[in-house]
Length: 110
Length: 120
Image (cartoon, rainbow over all chains, first blue to last red; front, side):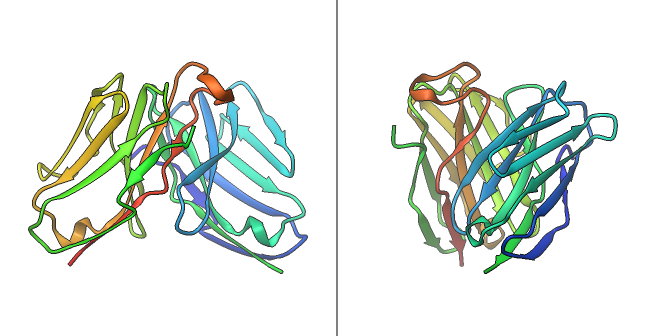
C-alpha cells in the first residue's frame, strides 16, 4: 500500500497546549499535504510542502518534512477546542492522485 | 463556486439493491476522485478521472462497483448489487493541475461533504 501512516492514532490535549502529529510514507514524493476532517464532513486542505522544502508555516500550523526519513510532522500551536478534528497526511502518487494516511484524531479539551 | 456537491447525503438500502452516488465537481477542475472511508480501512482511493477519462481504477474493490464521468460536470459511482460490507462514507473530490479561477490552488483536492451509505 502507498498509504502513509499517522502517529499517534489519537491525541488528547488541553486547550492552549501544542499538538504534534507525525506522518510516515513509503515512496518518493513531489509534495506532501495535510488535511483536516471535522466529524461528518469532507476533508479540507491545510498546507502543502514540496519535497525540496524542509519547513513551512501557516498561521498556527508548522509542517516539517524529512525526505531522507520519509516522514513529516504537523504542529498546531496554542490549540483551541475548534481544532478538534482528524488530521491526515497525503502523498502524491506520481499522477494527479494522492494517497491518504490513516489519520490522527485530535481532541482539544476546553 | 459552491464547491464539490455530492448527493444524496445519506442512503439506506437493502442488500442486493442498486445504489447510485452522484458528484458535481468544481467548475474548471479536470480531475475527479472517488474515495471510500471506513473505520477499519481509513480513506481509500477507488478511482480517479482526468478530463473525464478513468485513469486508475485499481482501487475499485469488485466488479459490483462502477464509475462513470459522462461530462466534466458530473460523475456517478454505482454499486450493483450492494452488500452490507459496502456500508461506508463515500467522498468525491476534484482538483486541477493548473491554477483554476476564483483563487483555487492547483494540485489540492477539494472534497464534497460525502454520502453516508448504509446497506442493511
